[in-house]
Length: 380
Image (cartoon, rainbow, N blue to C red):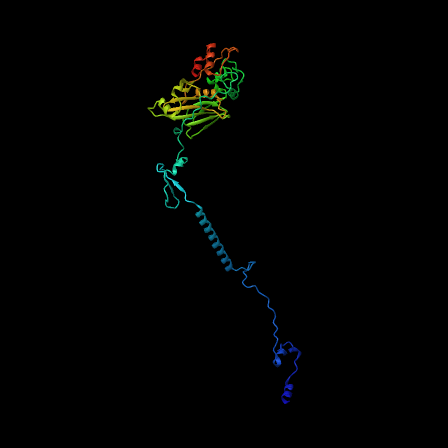
């Protein structure tokens, strides 16, 4: 055809230089549906925060923090509410013991008043006080008068237990051979282990206790424990390793009250007729119970009581220790001094003595009139 001929005449061959021009693929000609070829794009991570490994954005972190706070508050509130439910209402005992009223006092109204018939078992309850019970309100405890002394093998006045305490020979009456029996020397405040003249306080066997509050003084075995029961030192205990102990207790009487009146009110179960007046080595006047286990000293309005308390074996293991303490008691510092001790002729071996202090003294005074016999009689 002319048109085709003309067209073919006009088409010029493509030079090599134009071979790089991109032409429309033949798939687009003749009404064919073209097949489009796409290159697969690389996947990108969207929303990643630089520097985080998990890709968590700021909004997610904020939301997570809020959830943790809400959870913590909720759990705390729950446990607090449960704890409040478990606390029961506590009864409050009023100080009015006559009415014996008991009420509940933890955020609740008083629901019931308990009468005395309900609180009658409250004898076990003690009212709350700001101070400990006063010594004046505590009754005196006295030892039984029927308790026997421990054994005394050599009958020198010291029990065998006391011989061991002071290091003397339980089989020899006069260990230092100075004419005085061991028990006799001790209660006269001389050294039973040292030949006269040796005072007991210089022997190292005893100490001189000075009460820090009341300022009274008394000898005691250095191996014993000393302890004040109350802060003011009104009751002091001198305790042995065997459980026996001696208490020294201080009381006050009224200005116009006699010792007999005080004794009748305070020494419950004791007989005033059982007391014997005496004077100790420092010339302090006192009263002693006949068995020698209790003694009283009066100094102004103060009354000092010495009481022996036996241990579990219920024997008097240290009777002469108590005598020594009574003989050495001074309510305050004194100018009275113990006279020097003199050696005496030794009593013959055939002399038989008992452990009774009065019998020891009687025999001693009949065998010799040398020495301080008058001071010996003060204590026996």
